[in-house]
Image (cartoon, rainbow, N blue to C red; front, side):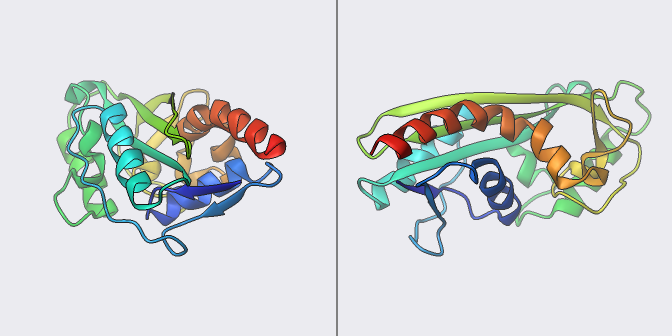
Length: 198
């Protein structure tokens, strides 16, 4: 079974490959193999954006299964911001360091540091069926960046139950607990069933 990963983000591609690597007979392709356009994230929710991406990419690759997702960081003290605008929090083009700096600046002076990473993933099968799943990783925002692993807001996010940031955790630990894994794990079961019965 062929599955087209509907993202150009190399960090996300690495994580998704690691999460789906154990599925036999599943061939993961990226836009290097099947070119697809950038789909604007115009939705007001993660689900709207994930569906928009899956459908837009599927239109350029008829009959091919597509996995698309939208992820972001919701910070309680900022009323859920940056939310669906996480990648563009500091403006366009996307700049991870600038996003982190803006987040820390906006949170200066507050002790309310609770936050959640959110992923909504959509598996759009070649026949048009769509399966949507969400994953949430609760945690808190640090007062300074720490660590060199991961990407995005990982250097300032400490997941509940840990005392270091996602950027300081080994990749295998991050992948085991991440919001992306929590969204993709049930979809992996669907993919495993399809890939082994086709």
